[in-house]
Structure formats: structure tokens, C-alpha cells
Length: 155
Image (cartoon, rainbow, N blue to C red; front, side, top):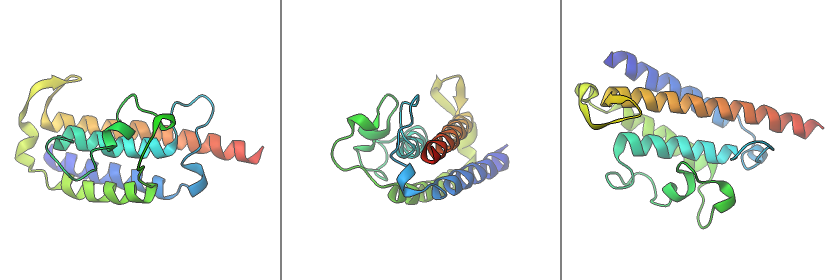
């Protein structure tokens, strides 16, 4: 299972980054009708959620600025953003750094029981799997939103 999770981490994150890098600069801050957020938010949300669940952000890791919780946590939205908002290129570099750190998580910790289950996940390995599921879910949003933005641009 451990090698499978390591391979899945690399595959998921590299595909996510490839899709993010394919976005046009003018697309990232567009919030299409019917969507709660923009592409920029989804990218920061994936980064911040993974950091929170896997590394204990903001208390146990200093790899991201503390204001990322206010910008990208569940329930936040770009309309409420204030202060310094990182660019998508900064977020992309942080995603690349984060996957390096994710791959350094000791495989023996994958079977470690969580202090309390999180959305049905009972071990750290299951939590990693959830983080990958979450990332793919938001990648789907990004791909759908990109199509809507491109179609609206043609009209």
C-alpha cells in the first residue's frame, strides 16, 4: 500500500500542477456564474488543505503564511480577500515544494492511527488518500470552470 500511495501522490499532484500551469493568467480570477469561487481560490485551497491535514498547518508547520487559512480555508471566498494574496505562480511553486515534503513522509507512519477519525479516515495513510481524493475533486472543478470561462469568452 505504501508504494501505491507514494505513486498516487506524485501522479495526482503532477497532474494538478500541469492543469494549473495550463491556465491563462486572465482566467484565474474570473468567478463564473453559478460557482462559489474562482480558479485562484481552488489552487490555494488544495495547497492549504493538504498542508493542514498532513502537516498540521498553521500550528505545526511554517511552510505557508498564516493568512492562507483566512484566504483558502473551507467557507472562504475571494470576495472577502483582504491583504496580501499570493499569485498563482507562488501557489504553484508551493505546491511543488509541498509534494517533495509529502514524499518524505515516512511510510511507516501510513499505518499510524489518527487521534480521532476524520471523515471516516482512521489512519494517516487513509488521510493521505483523502487528501488525494480532495485534490482530484478540486481539479474537476478547475477543469469545469476553465471550460465555462473559455466558452463565455467566445460569446
